[in-house]
Length: 352
Image (cartoon, rainbow, N blue to C red; front, side, top):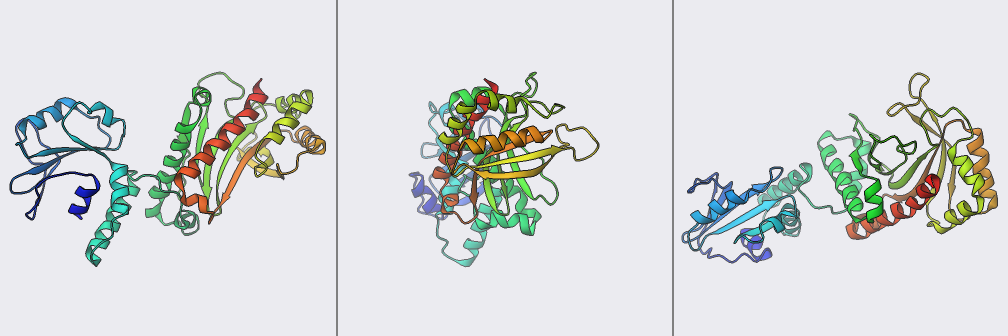
């Protein structure tokens, strides 16, 4: 496996003998995290997961190396490569290591077991690259195996962050608050929200983009509330906006992907009489698709928005478990980007 690793990352070193693997070896003015020691050369390893890269520390390590030695820096932040590009070191990101080992074919049963355990560990602590969603991820919500919770949590968080980073600058400049939802002991869903700065006074600040996963599907959608949490009037901001700009809203919906769903719900408090953040339950009133949008569709929406005292709307895409795109990370991220950037047009319409 070591030779495979060295070849994969094109690390050239004389390794004709069986190496020693040592941890926390002291050298002059430093203590690297590990070393792979051969007879005439060594690979010193400095690992940074959450701590920042210290160039002074790395420089001291380099000064203590012998002629044939190498210094390998491993971090979880790919941008660290830019930080150390002027140093004579080898840089590898943990995602690259995960990808390397994921492609390795074990030579025996023991090696296979250790490799699977290590890859699983990297997934649990969030040091693996995003490889898509498997049936095991959806099955978690059926079996609720506690040890698997960190894996699916890290997957949805990593996927959502990759989608967010791919969004255009305008959206990222407005929707700056990214957060993973609180995960209960036996969750039915895990979600990630992208919303505005919650400290600002903005009646639309609770409108957001949400990415969630449950036993059945991955969903990417926008959340539209009727302007305010505590609005008492049944005819709210959204109703007035659609009624006064009927044709514009009709054209907007027709411009969206016809695979999107359009759900209207009634928002009620979970407990007590007041709807507020964290105390809100959505009761589905109507489930539509954007496959066919006509004047009658808009008229129907207006009737519902007038009837429902505290309406809420979800517009987005459902990707059901088993869909091949769930196993194609780059395509899946591109879909997430497309959905959010299209739905952003709806939020802009609401606020204009």
